[in-house]
Length: 339
Image (cartoon, rainbow, N blue to C red; front, side):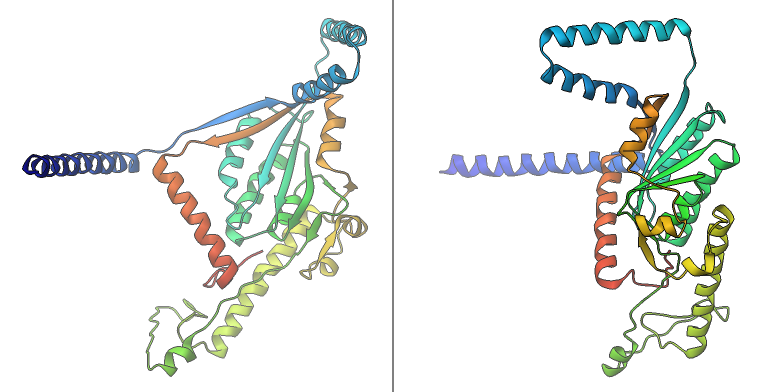
């Protein structure tokens, strides 16, 4: 028994030492990673090959062996002849933007646009598959500015919306020379909203004081814990109206055919109704449009993959979870404005 007790004590000391060493190593890695910038990599996929593989798989399953061989021979002959003619096809660069409240996908979008602008010509086309219900004003303002770079370079930009492009999402969509929407996609919501709870009366009820000290008359207009004033509310509303006016002017600049005062009410429309309002130019899914373009052009899907450390990935997951919680229960606590 004495031997077992000695062994248990030795084992406990060993485990403690090993754990301490691991903690120190993890801490050193974390400290070193703070000074490093995570890299990234641009992934390029030729969508023509993807569509071709789908078709060939179906042909192989449906046709008998002789039919499949004959068809494959015919396609190879046609491809060889096209290669001899050496006719340069136009290129279509396909980007994807899946927007959250912070427009986090902008981090990759800006690198993708930088890459394609180094090679694309006005004879090419950029297709953006966009899905977003909007979010923070400054975040979607930056995302829209990235798309404006494509327009400024004189390269045709087509925006495809299969599900939703509302508020900040539509702010991005309107930059496209052509907007294509699925029949039941949600579009519009050209408005600005900001909301926050105020628990000042609850604090007073329990004899709790909360002080807000500011330098500048309008440094803080509305607060969560302090007592809000009518003057503060008026200033806050004035700021919202100013932001809304900027939003309207931005959309009108890129979609001059719109009756901007008629559609900038914060309302949303399904694709079919949005076509009548001229919010979109055509009703079609992105799959249909890209399949059509693949018959006459080379399609390249660009996706910038940001390399993140384990520490960054854990932090990002925690941040996303907190954002969702805040959005669901507190409607983004604070004076943040949203498209």
